Image 1 (tube, helix red, strand yellow):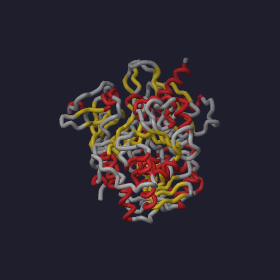
Image 2: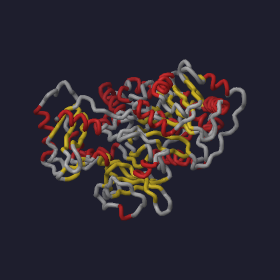
Image 3: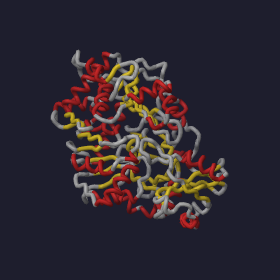
Image 4: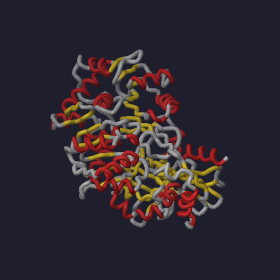
Length: 543
């Protein structure tokens, strides 16, 4: 049975509980729940939520630690037809306040720290009527998680509420790496399509085990008939994850499937190389959020068996997945990165449509085929399909900027990324549209240019930023080194790095380089570089 056969995605948890009741559903912090137990507890939670007044289309913020309680609450909310709202605490207190004011939730379920911040910063103060505290003492008012669950004991929960497939299933806020975070509306149809695409493209089989370093993906596991293992880590800081602990859990639970941000996989890969680690149970590793360095792909690949691979799917919160490519193909195209061609992200997933249009910062109200550019020409990527979100929650301006209506009422999403299609139908990613640097001599695309400099062995990563206003910006290359102490204050190294692009047409005008100790990055993957912040820093350095 495919996910698309059901309106309410929570029904798949009930199916698993009937067909495979004793299969572990979730393993977290030493606690294991079978599918039968997770189904029972989420039913109990759903009934408790109903007793407290949560109902169809109730907006509920969920800020709890990833683990069994996270899954119990999420499925409980979905079963009653409520709309869980997921935000990253790392987006900043003020951004959180603005985002929650926009959503106007009626309930807030979170850990004590989240409730303290909610009270201190006045998050959605006028709309929140119900509070539940999870994982600690109740904060001031409301209910504890245990009280919520006790409420659900009094009456047996019936089947999940039947919903229209186009109804909102969740609101997931973007990371805010290029502006104020936006609330992406996921319908049950979108979640269904995402799961179908992931299963079919990557060949995920029943009975597999997923190491969920990115918690939201764990919600797909019941439909994929997988066991979810939550690792012992700070999920808001994947860059600080303990690689030995990650490897231990993979071995202990015979993990077959893993998603990891480029920052997390870099730590695991370096540790694995040093210790000679082998991970024979892993069938596939997925990584996204930012371009994955080829050194990381090599290190992770050497730990896997020959028929396993690392995949780097391309997508966004609004559209996932869009494309995918294996590390074997990426490494064949490594020369392209160093020549400034960008990063090859593969071909569109079957069922996903993609076009490249002329670059503009203005809204596009109606789709026209005349918007498209020629093969090989860099433009903005536009996607559409069953897995693509059609709107942001209560954000008319963002919808105007990112959505294009087709003649058949189909909505097409502007990714905000620039790239091009090659002769083989593959997509090459060249950077964010908002990050392009426009000088008097032409336009520079960040990822394309950075690939030229990243090949230097001393460079960990680089970021091209523009100082000043379009179209007379000064291009500045910011560089974070692999070994900061070794090369501190080295003018000779600066010349070596700049010389890599001195004779190439697209980078010859880049003549200013600044070393930065630690790039500011997003809170979700710790991999997307906040180039806007770097640009302000660089401007201050050059004044």
